[in-house]
Image (cartoon, rainbow, N blue to C red; front, side):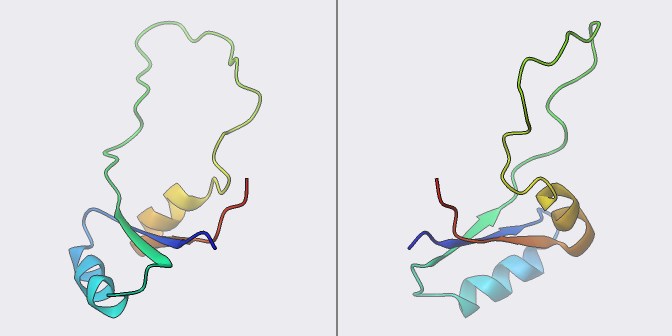
Length: 79
């Protein structure tokens, strides 16, 4: 079974500490500290047409969830 992933916001180390202890020893749960600092793409030059068909993320609302609640839970992914 693919692990559950808990993505914790960088500014919510209280969640990180709590869940590190709570899920200790459970290999089916993976804690991930959000390493992103913001949108990587910067609008420096004129925008070219998007070549990708769709957003590659399976759950595109994760960014918003991490920002609003301090964490997001990503279920087992198939693929």
